Image (cartoon, rainbow, N blue to C red; front, side, top):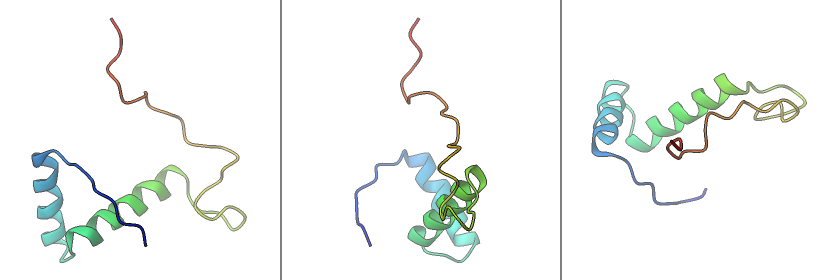
Length: 69
């Protein structure tokens, strides 16, 4: 198990804690559930490629930076 620090905007943290409470999960368990569901939706697991098909990666949606004018 890997531990790391994650910085979240306060409003996202509130949404996550609210959803975790609704689903009767810890915040950690809720975040793992959402990450697994999201990754499966983007690249479903296949028998030959656990974790998704690496031969056809999901498209990138920007680089995380604001577009240049």
